[in-house]
Amino acid sequence: MQKRVLITGAAGFLGSHLCDKFIAEGYEVIGMDNLLTGNMDNINHLFPLKQFHFHHHDVTKFVHISGKLDYIMHFASPASPVDYLKMPIQTMKVGSLGTHNLLGLAKAKGARMLVASTSEVYGDPEIHPQVEEYWGNVNPIGPRGVYDEAKRFLEAMTMAYHTFHGVETRIVRIFNTYGPRMRLHDGRALPNFFYQAITGKDITVYGDGSQTRSFCYVSDLVDGIYRLLLSDYHLPVNIGNPEEITIKESAEEVVSLTNTNSKVIYTPLPKDDPKQRKPDITKAKAILNWEPKVGRKEGFAKTYEYFKKVIMEKEPESVG
Ligand code: UDP
Image 1 (cartoon, helix red, strand yellow):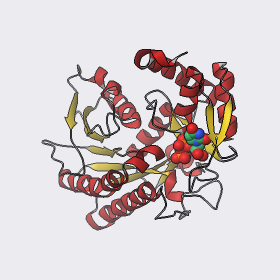
Image 2: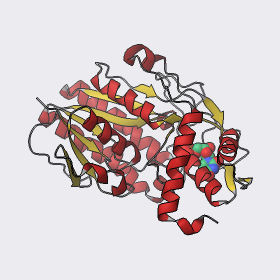
Image 3: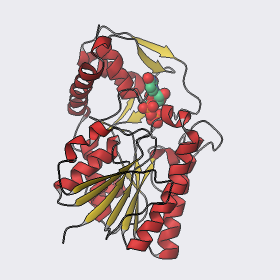
């Protein structure tokens, strides 16, 4: 019998790619989004399909779905530092109240629920690379605290439903991910760099650019998440690409790929910006038989094509 999955944050970057994945795997997909940071352009192509449905709904309010549900994927949340600084209360509510509502739904339906956690639960990490056993170094009252603590609450609540109510749960800790459907102006490093390179603006590296990140291409991430959902492992699993790079180097790679005349400038580092981030993916390899396949060269090239297209469609005047 066809499986039914509810995906929250369906119109977002990761949510929309998950919708595509589950449709391709033969599921009936119910997408939910309040469109706070989501974009209907990401899922418009799914509306003609009879196995896709969309609910414009805020998961911090009571969530009702009629009929059976096999899986719930909770991906709703502002996810870029710029977004959660603008929407701190909504960010906290979707991670806490939203997670609670959906766990309640999972319990009522007997559904398995996978929650999107984050490398941000490790904060500004003191151990490197980050293993799942590390408890993290988060400043609860700093500007990132609203996201980090909401996701830490999400994990704690998920474990409580697992232990106390016997709900089948999965927790993925997602590291920096990129690719088509990232929001052009979401404020994150790669959309900024591509936008700036394509439109001939200065490329803004924050701080001296020596902080590191490890960027995972979206198709790899989606594959890892799908495997985790279908696995029988309920503790958190890191999914990300362990290829670490400094932010300065990533800006330089964008400059060279796009052949831009833009120059790299250095502006102040935001408060509590993590100095380094790299997933230890030993668990994902062992339990899910997963590792990333798409290197930065290929992933950056696809992302460049996407941003060029979006800019030509939405803001042709910004290209000098
Ligand atoms: N960053 C940057 N220039 C930008 C945007 C971000 O140098 O225009 C830096 C940011 O300070 C951080 C890294 O790039 O060190 C990644 O930032 P992003 O917002 O993509 O996500 P984060 O990993 O910090 O959540």
